[in-house]
Length: 321
Image (cartoon, rainbow, N blue to C red; front, side, top):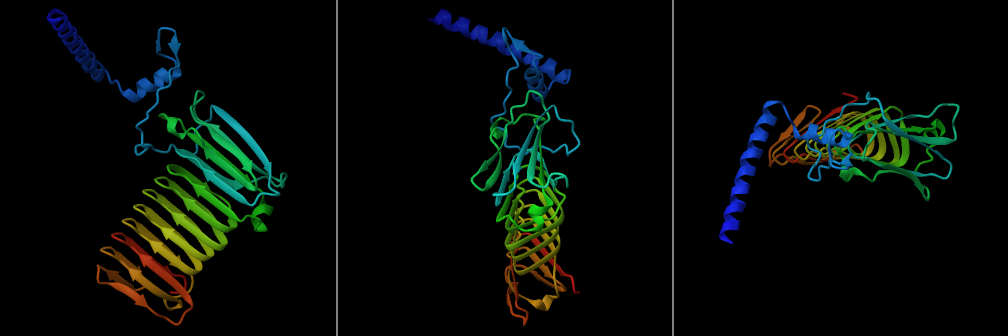
């Protein structure tokens, strides 16, 4: 037994020395683990009869993922088309992706088109597009297998009639990481957008009969115009800006992030409930900083604004001032 133990230790020592030497050589010639994974995935390395081995980062939380924007060329794609009549909800949740929402061609007024493009030929992603009752659901079912550069681009094309006549009850967009570009006005009874750690740019107006909810985690969200009975904004640790907001009630929670909006009317059109924690709130020409600042401010106007900035910053300007 002692001889076997000594022999085992000797073998282990030799392997450790050999492994260290190979690691040093690899570092010297510019080796990286991510590149090795790509080569294995592409089939350039094989082990005996096994090739095209999936190189999966189970521990990847995506915090280091960076969007390559919308300009890359796809290696694989899927096209989906659904009649919009009978649909009243749209739910979209795709991680580590580029999302584009635009208008369908005037020649096709009866269908919603959803094109899914994959950057890699041998991708491990799968975006499911299906109708469940009256809801169009677009969901990433393979997100746990995301690899380097395994990007997805989802382009949703909506007919103008669907938006113009306010047929939708709810639009829900949830993108934990990635980039979103909304190129057309969106209208529904309720609209909810959560961009997580991604970047979202809404170039047109969002309007809802009841409520608009916007939330950004560690990313950024910029919207041109919001109109609803109630607007709920959560800035998390990121940045959220709205060029124009029109609502009877506006609620904002800044967390440790930053929120900047321009509200309809003038400062006295609103009554305020302010809790700025250790952060700062600026409303028109008035500033509130620190734990003892804020409180309730009553004005003659019928509109309301509730602000909780935590340790972040909230800045409100007004269209009429």
